Image 1 (cartoon, rainbow, N blue to C red):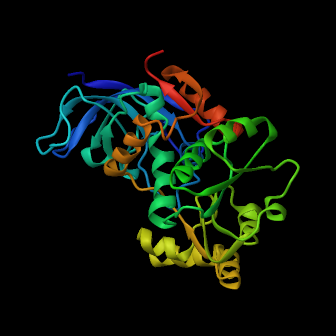
Image 2: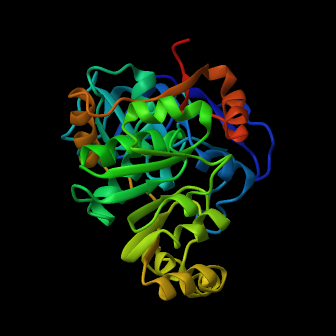
Length: 337
């Protein structure tokens, strides 16, 4: 077994360019497997962490290896591992305290992984975990979507949107989404029933009496969502300011909970005035839920949408492209090209 591996790290928050370094191979705990990473994908949380934007919620020691999504091959198993064996092809979104997929190897808790869909490449598989788990947990666990429910998914051509549209349609919902004109064909092919070109139309003027909204923008876009949701409906944001309820559930200290209460006060008032349930969501890793996603993928109910694939050596370029906000679907980093 090697003693070192290559990884892209930051030495401090705000570091503009990742640094390629040789670092020690990960130690493998009893309940972990060592994964040889074949592909990883880029998510907004990666660039936000690099900038220091997640410091309020997440604490990391430096140097820090970024990256949360992976697909690869198990090359070592801990003594308590029962779900996997050496040679298994797996995919997953790792725990927030164990990130580091922009590397050659990573030790991952077995509960965060599932066997890779047999009909997907490593690159396609790596694109799925974070966005599919986020969509599934919001639509299935939080909203409990029923057939004919009306749901607006903001940013339908983005990484989350492309998966959320497909999951919502599989659950029988009527789906509206926002995107630009050039992406209308893409979101329509994924199942969107109503498409709003945000360059020329405000969704708040076109949609009414919706059951649910998934917000990926925050700010005014989030506030406008309260105009279209019926009383008793629900808005879930992954981009707006977390509220007090999230801070308490997340286990933040009381002073941080109070700060969130003040920062999100405007949205809390809107929720009260409109009788709309409002939540901030932070995805939780789950190998069990990924097994559900895997089955849907293998049956053709969900198709991954990958915009670009970069070689491992071009990881910083992948993050730079993510920062443009123009990706259609996911951006993937491959060790195989």
